[in-house]
Length: 305
Image (tube, rainbow, N blue to C red; front, side):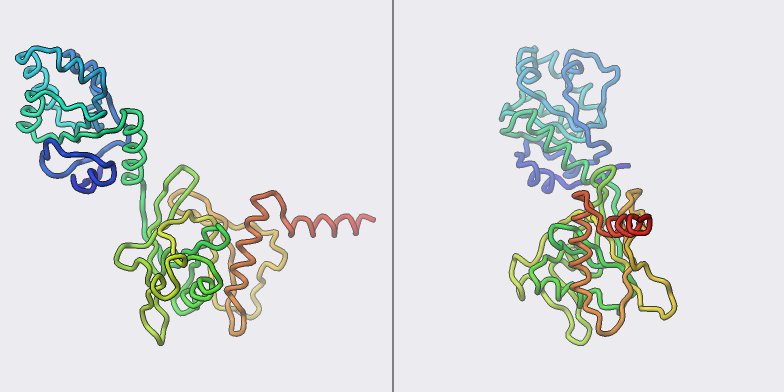
């Protein structure tokens, strides 16, 4: 998998200065970085040229000690591998022959005032997020008592109205209607709103509402982990719904299992309060207390007596 990133975005995110623009964009295939010490000596076996290249203090001092002819020869071969870009750390500018070879081969060269260790961490985190699997889901994502709650279900069930009531009660909106889900770790997914619908929610009969302007900046959050999914459905008479909470359901999103609650909706039911209780109960479970299991244990003890 690869992703294309514009130079301007890459420079802004990592606070870099552009020395050679190259083609104006980067093609990233890996979130790992590489320090090309051996390649500068002329050894190119096992060269990880597909990674972002970092030049630290030792590599830069070695380049400055080479003769101009040797430097031009080795840099020409080095740049011919077309690495995504080269980042020079500690504000150490490379020799002119290095920059000329980069221009000839269209390889971007950037300059950073930070140490190599600092840049490795920042660049790896940024590129990992860009390469992470992402999907778009229909739903509403909120931060309720620190729990990332995603409301799912058919249109017209009141997801947006519930989210608006929750915002009014002091909770924060992440995304309404369209949620971009990214797997940020093997066991964790995170949601955010597309730029086009960020801060906005739709209320039927009123239209589009800007939550940030109406309720203040504290009513929104740009990104939140998805910890709990509440699937809303219209109440069906005769259907057996879970009344004890002993059934643990999961929903798989991007190969991550997320706890799920099936929540029936009918007129007169205050869904905002129900969602708040679900979030509080989820937090209690993560801290080791499960009220449903406690009740089951009490009942078993009573019957055994």
